[in-house]
Amino acid sequence: MLHSHPGSCPICGGEMVIRELECPTCAITIQGRFETCPFCVLSKEQVELIKIFLKSRGNLKEVERELGISYPTVRARLDDVVRTLGFTPVPEVTDEIKEELLAKLEAGEIDADEFVRRLDEAAA
Image 1 (cartoon, rainbow, N blue to C red):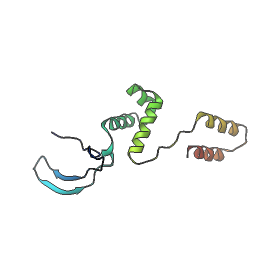
Image 2 (cartoon, helix red, strand yellow):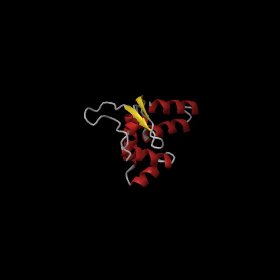
Image 3 (cartoon, rainbow, N blue to C red):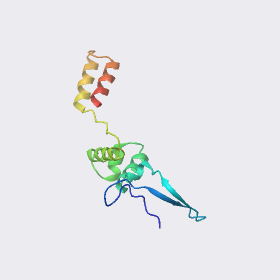
Image 4 (cartoon, rainbow, N blue to C red):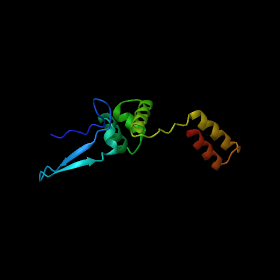
């Protein structure tokens, strides 16, 4: 019976190390210290979310529909996956900021390059 690799120690929370690999076909065993997959730290629920996210090609509305949860919950769960993998989630630009920048663009107060620059700044 195969078990999934625990991402962290159930006792202290430390990183688990793989020390032995075995081939089920020829029964050879290799011992040592093996690097784990970076996604092994994800919970089963997080892996399932990533599978659905990839299947839907990043369409959060489709993930929302398939899981039966709200859009903000999908975003929050994806942000949690991002943090678990050691990254910082990119903040979402609010609709208010987008509308303000679009209004300035339409009024000719800023050009397209400035619009993109300010949008990037708002997301940082």
